[in-house]
Image (cartoon, rainbow, N blue to C red; front, side, top):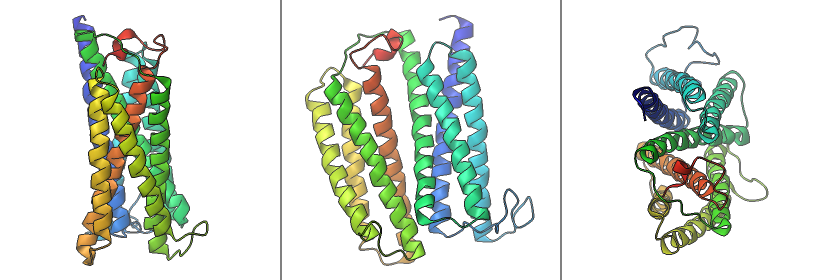
Length: 308
């Protein structure tokens, strides 16, 4: 790898990492806005805040304006990442794709956030806002880990060991279902705020609890197959263990929500619940990408990507 290529790789690695971190903070900030009911902290105005570029010093306006600022920074970094991968990573359509989806979903959630401020939105639509934010974060994580893996592979290529289509489909199915379970949780949060009693004939809480229970079973099955049947794929085994830790932590936090009575403490527990599920979905999304790159057809990507 010549000096110029090394500099390009270094740029891609660090701009992708910065994008991923700020994307996570933007996702967390959206949760803070929701839980503190600060969505109208700047009034029904966007991008100004109560008619000003700099908000008044109220807690709600500072929270909402800070979230807007972090989201804007996430957008700028997403553009920088997309342009960088487009120019410097021409042979990697996969990483260019995830840099594009990162930018795309940042734009979509930004538009949805602006519409939520200017016009009132239903609980179902607001739940999608969180859903799109975790897709943006997951895409940023895949882009980041992908380019760091690419750098390691260039330095030290390793043997390609494909995974089975059955295992690949199990990972994909679990990831898709996780997104559905996440949506039920986001809907529950907004339904509680809006006083919604039933959704599709079920109480929102019961719907989410049923979805969460199925998710735990799926994750445990996935982790078992990952660890027991893939001894030569260290990264797959590690990812499987991480998913179990996250889903059990998520369940523990979820049960604690039923016991917490103090409003200020409840808010922090809910935010922890949101952070863990965002991380779980992002890890599963990266795992989905890895099993795709390790699937039997080894001609889709450069050989370096297929290392384990």
